[in-house]
Structures are given as C-alpha cells and as structure tokens.
Image (cartoon, rainbow, N blue to C red):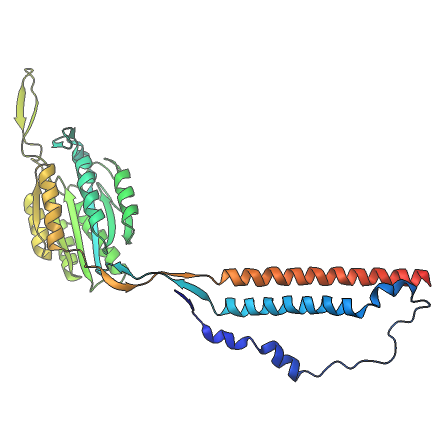
Length: 344
C-alpha cells in the first residue's frame, strides 16, 4: 500500500501560480538596450516561434521539477503487509563462567567428549534463538566480569559473541558477585527497572575472586526486582588415569558452591538448577522457557519504507539540466552578440 506521510505538503503545489499573480509584471521598455550597427549576425534570433517552443519546453520541465519536489516533501512511503512481532518487555541477561575450570571435559556432545564451555555454548545458543521478543544481554566473567553484549533484540549478535568466547578470556578465577553486580548496574543505568528482569548465571565453581560478595550482590538485585536463576554445571563423577596406570573415579565438581548459588536464587525469587550432563543442561533451559515464557506474537506492525528520495532525485536532475541549458543558451547569445558586433 502506498501513502503520503505528510499529505498536507501538496498544498504547496499552486505556490508558483500564486507568486506570479501577486508579483507585478515586467514592463517592456521601448528603447533598445544595445545598439549595434548591423543585425546581420542575429538572423537566428528572428524566428520567434522557435524561441517560444524552446521556452515552453523549459517551462514544462520546471513545472515537473516543482511537482516532484513537492511530492518528495510529502514523503511518499510504501507500507508493507502486517507482521506478527513478539515483544515481551523482558530483559534477560546471561552470565557465563569462563574460568579455567570450565575446561574440564566431563560433558558429551554428539558422541564426543567436550569441555563444559563447549556444551554450554551449544545449549545456550539454542536457548537464545528461542527467546524472540526478549532483550538479551551477555556477561562473561572469570577473575573479572565484562559486559560483552548490552541488552538488545539482536539475538544473532549475542550468539556470535558467545561462540567467540574462550576459556581464560576473563581470567582463571571466578567472580560471581562481580558478574551479578554488573548485571544490576547495566539494568539500572538503562532505566529498565520495573520491567521483567531476569539473570541466568552459569558457573562450575565457587566465588574465588572479585570485590563484591555474591550474597550482597543478590540483595542488590532483589532491590531492583532482578530475578536470578543459577545453574551449577559439572559432572559428579569422571574417570581419570591413576598413577598405577588404571582408572579411578573423581568428582570434577568438588569446588562447586551449591549452597551459595541456592541462596542467590532464593533471595531474588529465582531457582537453582544442577546440570550434570548435556541432556540435563538442555532440560534446564527448556524449563526456563516455561518459567519465563516467550511473548505471544502481537499483530499490528507494518514495515514502512520511505521513498521520498526518488522524486527528490528526479527534481534535482531536472533542476541541474535546466541550469545547464540556461548557461548554454546564455553562452550562445553572447557569442551571437559578439558575431553581430564584428559583422558591423
């Protein structure tokens, strides 16, 4: 469907006629402006019908240029078909642990043993893709916490930057409190307090670095209505080589501080989950989808594409053409005058 954003600008179309009627006409003088001894060199100017045709042609081009200019000012636009766009108003931050312990290969992905971060990327990527309508942000933390992606509807960018993260990028230790505090700070700075605020913290250890205690950070989050879901990742048993050459079972998640993660979730009204394998991690993210449902599509949005530059460009081309023609005609008249003077 085509429409004009500012149709009232079409009222400017008769302005040239109005200006012509209000301005006083030019009076013709009886005396010649230039006396020459001979008119032999001006024979080409004696054909009045040819001159009038040239004038009429230029007038019509000027009229077309004016119409195009007014049409551009009215801002023509093309309105597309109605689209269903889900908008939930939820701010969802993901905080992913990149400490050295995330390198433990106690997860299986596609019949292949992988480290915890690789499994996290695969599962979290699918989760991000499903969150249509949510503003998603990404925090990466280790010894320090960094805001990798601010809250955005661009899920593709969040996915790309998550996939580019690597273990040790933010240091070898774990600063859970700093990651939570950073999420609180970003939401507060964006005046997002009052909307649905969710933070998902995924870690495999305990708070061993940072300046803010995780419990204090959780209390700050609770004050602005930030609900935190914590995920403790890591298998409970893993077979490793022993000194004698055999295999012995070890607990690769011995450092996981489940008590603190549970308290963080409880303070903010969230929940703590335990992911012991890839299937468990997938189940947790599916459960999060149910607890924090994606918005239903809302009809009523129509994409609008402005087209004002087409008539504006046409008016510009015609104006330049008329100016060039005027200069050429003036040059021709000047040359004829000089020829007439020389002939006299």
